[in-house]
Length: 352
Image 1: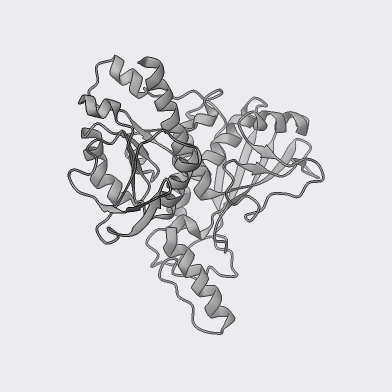
Image 2: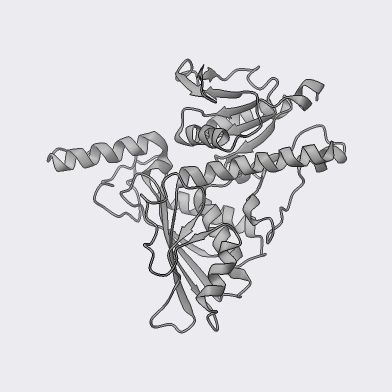
């Protein structure tokens, strides 16, 4: 790696036109991430789009062989195909890769990192500083997981000290998990149904508006079961026997943003709710006080943490408790990715 790469503070966002890419740019700016330039990259079809970064006008650039020259960190926030096609080029150019698409974790090339859980579940991989110390010429690859993975692992980590007999999570994913196309389809479906017109179903191949779904239509490019399997796989790989692995189910909800969930935990003898809440607060979870309203998809918009309602005991199961929570799906994932880069920056400074 050249000296220029070592001292560069430029970062790149691949998939800058996606909802994740846009949110990532906002988080980098709001957290004052130390960078001299945020380079916005995407497929050629959206290249040339005028936008702004750090308050200055800029353009989204097309991906090419030289896109990562002089880049310190490259965030992949678009589609899996783009990540697969370009991650190696970024690494060869000397950039640290932080993948938000799940592509590199699914293929075993990158390990998942959730910095907020480091105190209870330390990372199981080498950082860039470790790689440099061992003589590795390539920066390490990092995977920043999807919001439901962060939620599931956080709840499992917080509850683990109380030895739950079982943990069950029911997620209600928003359509924004399918990027802008999902947003547009729900909006059009809602408008058409209220106007008694046929619904558009190009993305989900089924009516999402005014509905709850356990599956998509046969022509949908990805199934709800595939999404569930990917979440369950990533959760199991991250927890790696260090915390109870929750059972996970998904029901598609007709909402635009916000990942809502209901969780059930059962213990041989239920600990006081205050102890459970304290354990989760220590991991950065925000919990409503007694009498305060429960979080909603609307109330968590723009918030970076997982938010829970007051934990309630089950009325029929002596050792059972229920948790209701919501997180801004785009903000939670983007914040975790930026925290990874912040941790790496701090490590590099302490090692120099």
